[in-house]
Amino acid sequence: MPIERSSPVGRRVFLGMLGLGAAGIVWGSKAQDAMEKLFAPITAKDGTGLSSLLPVGRFRIYSVTGDLPSRSTTAYSLKVGGHVDSPYTLSFAELTAMPSLQLTKDFQCVTGWRVHDVKWTGVRLGDLLDKAGTKPGARGVVFTSFDGEYTESLTLEQARRSDVIVAYDMEGHVISSDHGGPVRLYVAPMYGYKSCKWLDSIQVTDTPPPSGYWEVRGYDADAWVGKSNGRDDTPTA
Picture 1: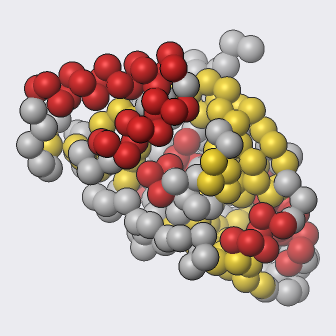
Picture 2 (picture 1 turned 90 degrees about the vertical axis):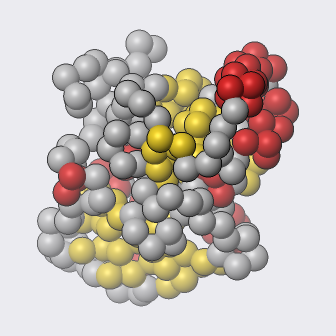
């Protein structure tokens, strides 16, 4: 599929970037971090209209708005509300002071690529819901992004899984804006589009969870890895 670049990318730069991508895999996080700083401005658009960065380290970076929003940890806040007893807002410092959970899990994109054994740290989404106190009749959870466009949702049962976290650290570092930081959702057993980046708010609903950004465009609402696109992406281990 042809790539329409939003800014010129020379052949040497492109090939060099691919080489650095391999370096990120072989040499580890230092090479990957350097590559992210060098190539973050380079963008492309695929056939779906999805804006993306070309491959960065072990990841491909996507945005539906054509840019990467940024918010510092000091300016960041997370709102939790909706069909709850006690709505509240957390600063980044307050979020990171809560009991944390570490997961080492794959990140699987619905388009087919996978990053193995990513180290995530965050707070269980279920703990954040318990802090607010979900009211009787709660059925779903809606997530919004501070990119102003993206939304996602889970059923309440899915949201309370132990492998669903509000993540603030990836591979030992505060999650960068490129990767949806400083705080993002990480839904380990589902495709990456469920893991809402640049997380702004968590809202509990008393109705079935509405379709998110990609679901209204035909993607599965229950995006379990291995159950989409007619392809088996189930991890082998």
